[in-house]
Image 1: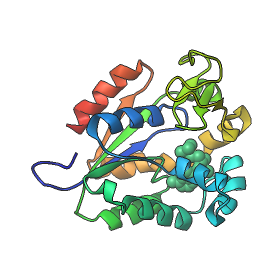
Image 2 (image 1 turned 90 degrees about the vertical axis):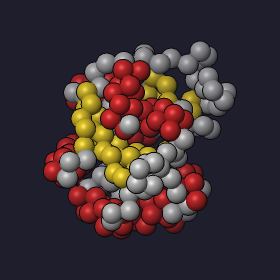
Image 3 (image 1 turned 45 degrees about the vertical axis):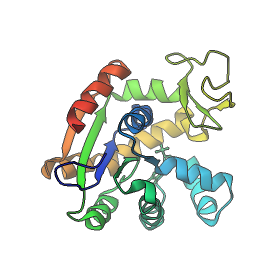
Amino acid sequence: MENHETKKPLVIILLGPPGVGKGSQAEKISSHLHLPHISTGDILRENIKNSTDLGKKAKSIMEEGKLVPDALINEMAFDRVEKADCKKGYILDGYPRTTAQAEVLSKHLGKDADIKVINFFASDETVATRISGRLICKKCKTSFHRAFKKPKKEDVCDKCGGELYQRADDHMDTVLKRLQVYKEQTEPLIQYFDQKKLLKTILCEKGMDEIFNETLAFLK
Ligand code: AMP
């Protein structure tokens, strides 16, 4: 969905702690606005699965709940957003995650994009509960939850029949580390984008549809 007035691509950046529901909202925005959903976490996991050089470098860092170095991530993200399907815009889920990444991205985009940033917010308690019950489809990456979004058949994806699994970094000890890393390294981006008047905070202690409606209202 490029902006009809400016014809600039729409770049939607989703901020928020792990487990807040960014990925699920990104999927909904993606199908509603016909923009690709770009999750740096998913790209990294794909690299790990395929044992690429990047995957080998990222694996242990991700398992510890830490951040993969900025230079690797920036290169990987730019490679992706230069693809043809990103011409009209795209949704960034999990990128940028540090001030250094945000600065490189802002420079890369310059004035050639309409940037909208959504800060999804929920309490630590809520996100820890959500994340530790999360199940992901190995095939199509759709997420489910042991308590809140149960698949019809245990451990089987409703959408594609793929096998559901719990991500290695969704175990409670790693979740706590990821929340700490989020607070230290990613939360400063809220102020960074707020100062540029690009950001809207949406509280996520409510139903997915309500969150989605608020999200769309901001994007229109
Ligand atoms: P996610 O699927 O977004 O929760 O990301 C899973 C893991 O991938 C994170 O805990 C980081 O180790 C790594 N990762 C994903 N995106 C980034 C990023 N923008 N910068 C650094 N590391 C990242």
